[in-house]
Amino acid sequence: MSDELIVFVTVPSGEDASRIGEALVSEKLAACVNVVPAIESIYRWEGKVARDAEWLLIIKTTDERFEEMEQRVKGLHSYTTPEVIAFKISRGSDEYLKWLRGAVTPDEVQG
Image 1 (cartoon, rainbow, N blue to C red):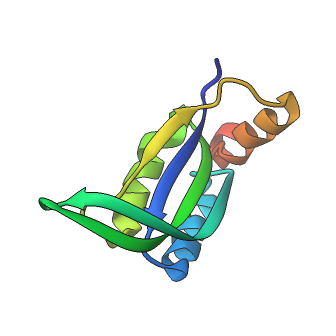
Image 2 (cartoon, rainbow, N blue to C red):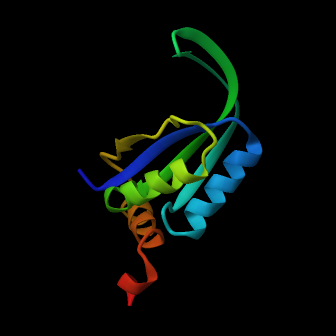
């Protein structure tokens, strides 16, 4: 088991998806953010069943960067309770996982 994560975040628009994804990658909080457009979410909110069009962000990061990434998502997000759900990557290609770790390593740590 490694410390690399896949994180799901839903957002209300493509503009929000691009803005949040760009910020996370630019700030080295994510190695990559995939934007999946036009999903339909059905969920319970404030005692009622709601249905909305959303976009899904699939974020690749590390456990070490998760808390800072989560706080940044919350700061940029328009929802009061944004979805931020992380899954451990149990296996992956060594080359990709090495790239992922390097892409989220702060410059001062890389030397």
